[in-house]
Image (cartoon, rainbow, N blue to C red):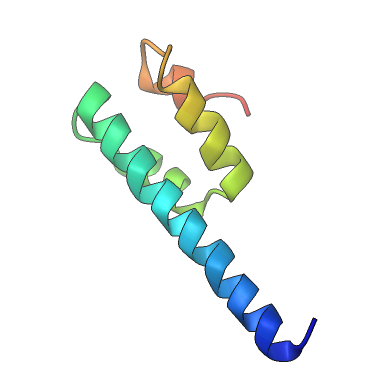
Amino acid sequence: MTAADQLIERGRVRGVEQGARQMLLMLLERRFGTLPEEAFERVIAAKLETLETWGLRVLTATTLEDVLGEE
């Protein structure tokens, strides 16, 4: 893989992560209302794998802690 290809791939991964963050934040706010700053910061700092896990939890969680709790 060339250096240019690596940069493109890194950009693609960042774009996917950013989209996952935005979607998760929208779902969390729709389900639980305005998020506490700590929850917002955790979502912003999370890696893609964690975002995906939390995204699936939104479907069945009854509280914000159920989503963002133990990973």
